Amino acid sequence: MTSSRPLAVITGASQGLGRALAHELAGRGWALVLDARRERDLHDAVRGLPGGPHPAIAGDVTDPAHRRDLVDVAAELGGATALVNNASTLGASPLPSLAELDTATYLRILEVNLVAPVALTAGLLPQLRTHDGVVLNVTSDASVEAYETWGGYGSSKAALDHATRVLAAEEPRLRVYAVDPGDMRTAMHQDAFPGEDISDRPEPTVAVPALLRLLEGELPSGRYRAAELLSSLASA
Image (cartoon, rainbow, N blue to C red):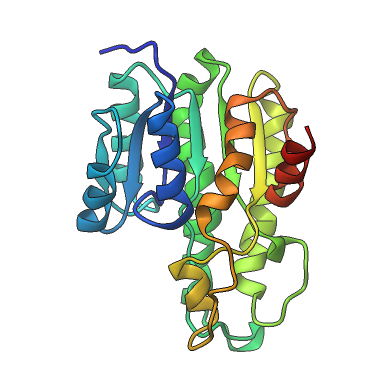
């Protein structure tokens, strides 16, 4: 089956930023292939989307078979024009210091936040090349700032930032982005600050226009901060 609509594969789409972005893209006429670990949450998210059908495939992005499923379904729909690597993990809550970070936990962080996005991108590259597509990797200010107890997560995102730069050099026909969405009122952010009130953080929907500018615009490959993109949109 082929479609003239742009098609985005979005990981971690059952909640937070992934869910907010999926809803906006669906409303703008995009076709979607959506991933999350929890099947019930994922299907709840898909039921609220306009347009469709938007295939929802529950699974773990670190599982090669699950990644192949995402690639195959995207191909059946005409091929991905965009990939949003949004799925992430903190690894543990509360966040431990580097000295106390369990090796198995650290390996899991790297598998989810770095290895899986790189591997899924590789699987979708033939489709993305055909469409001169977009790869958008969701990163964090923890990848460039030294926050205590954020060493595991931050180092995984720093590595993802660098992998993004390398992919951009290797695939000049694609637009390849790392984007820092800023602090958001999400379940993962709450896990990073257990017991604290994070109601002052903005909802994920606030960052979505910045991501849309990358997905639907013509900005050159690179690392961007959502706050700066939103500021430039407001002043335009």
